[in-house]
Image 1: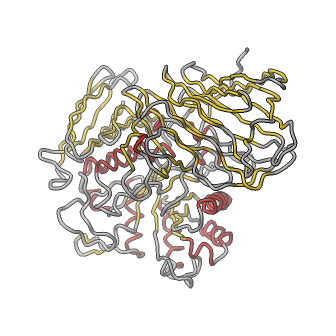
Image 2: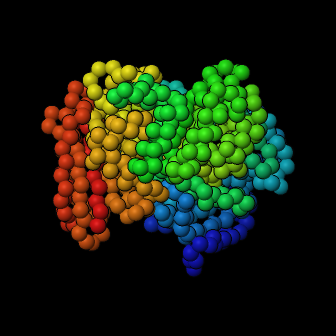
Image 3: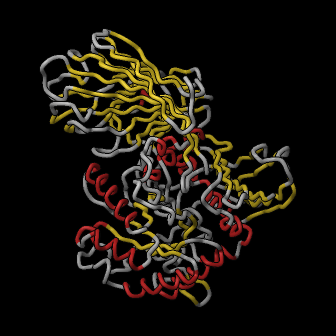
Length: 638
């Protein structure tokens, strides 16, 4: 078949009615990943192979109706099979890289019911294979007749071995590592798996338009997982979310992928997102109560002015104003456009514009529901706000997903970026359709509880939670003195090191990286402040250079000005890493390295550093020495 870049080619295989059994496979462009669908005696199943390993064995597909009938199942026939091949390039406004190959092979099966029974009389399943994973989704064609009021998704994931798995776990340390056979009950996604030393998987979903976010269920002693969701109606026009399996030879393969975004549709044609600018932000929540000389920081105008001035000088794009600016955030009478310090906020927005710094505004579900959300977001847009941090959304998972989608769209209409906090719906590739959806707290923000967030949490979450999308983890605390701080909210010590805190800001993928400390703690460490300022987005390239789940990670990102930045972080164990620089192009580069100093430790000696500067080429090898809970930061400029 002739291949044309940027175009989809359809190949109709013809009508296959009355065929009793057949297998059809979608195979990735590089031939290493495959998703094989099987229709045998009224049963639809699939299996997955990647890089020579059958990772998911024969697993069920489709839905189970209230009557116990399967859709599709006995009394159904395979009516039509079509294939599609796409070789294209996606150039996101922002993301992990400037150009993303959008290349896949697709097969679509259409079934029709041949007997009188409940439910729709037509059903479709679409399977795609990319070089870094596979995906499938269900649909009820628009011309289908009949509905089902209570259909239960019957998809299973019958993993072919007793793999080791880790899972998202809300505002707690991740679940795992555990063997699949040890899992018992509900397990949230993202799910990251290690089959062996050279085979890794991750399981998530993409383009969730309606219904509940994906969750899994398993029984102890088994390696098969089912979809844990309430029955839902099926009718003409229904389209499910994509069930997505990332496949790779390293744990960083899924971290570096844009597969979820590629499975989401492009932005609405009528929307212009040229105003969306990713970048670094300072934040007023964690500075409240911090002292520097005679000045005590608060969530007030004098502190905001100092933060804007610092952001402008450091090259940071934003200031985030958190809760209580419009009154006590959980009181119904707090008006999100007129209450509290609303006039002061409008003045700081104007001042920020003069300095080239955008201002974000906090809003939670109390004010967001009691007052018309459409009017509130329109007003913020008229004020010139840069974005909205939305917190404490209520409702069932299904309701929260619908409300998240609605608020994201309203923010886009008013040229507002958006960040969802406090148990948000998991990301599923929205940044392609809505580039203003720049981040969310799909993790445990690291300053919220020392009892939970330890170094091992960070180097687990970046291989699990971050597969789903951009994270707001609030890394970059530079006040790491021993003993409690004077800060109002959670003045506990932070179990990290200075080098690790700076490195984590680069490692975590986010459209807005929100820094939690006061300017003076950044300016007293110029080398690390330079590393923060060098993180100029959008990224040209990103690559996980090395890592092991729960142990360590080394991330490289190329800034928009061409600089190569590397961040490394470890768990509670010290380690020395040898890093080839062969990702660099030809030429001479000036390397600046800041790492943990002698005797550094995440619990007792957090602020000691050592640094070096030298010339290197792509033929050189770099040695990084990470203290327990520590890290390293590297800048390479041609």
